[in-house]
Length: 144
Ligand code: SF4
Image 1 (cartoon, rainbow, N blue to C red):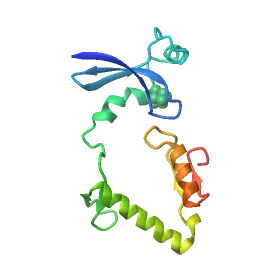
Image 2: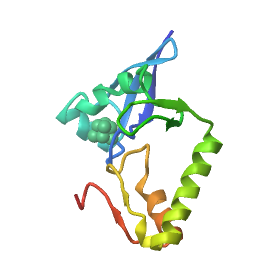
Image 3: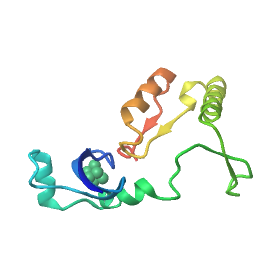
């Protein structure tokens, strides 16, 4: 079965309105459609049928090496040895490490550098977290 769905792409900052072609439950194509009534959709469809990142969307969504769960390093750094851990363990480890750094260096000792305003890591939540944590040490692709 094949269907077309209207989506908001979270591949990067603009959050473009777009469409995906879904075949047997899998995304097989993402595209813009100038017949759509949204002005942004018309604008983008004039520029291109899609952007390079959105053309890669089907591969990103279903790639067999996509990381969908936490991994913990178990070997020496660089040895590429990992074990899968539960989300609770991963979150506890991260919380404990953040606490350790805060106690030793103060909240400013933790800095965040986010890889752009991607849909997978919205900057708004990260900034909010940094405010609550008490650190101004925040940078994104803009500063870099
Ligand atoms: S990846 Fe492309 S379609 Fe998606 S939000 Fe970015 S520019 Fe728009």
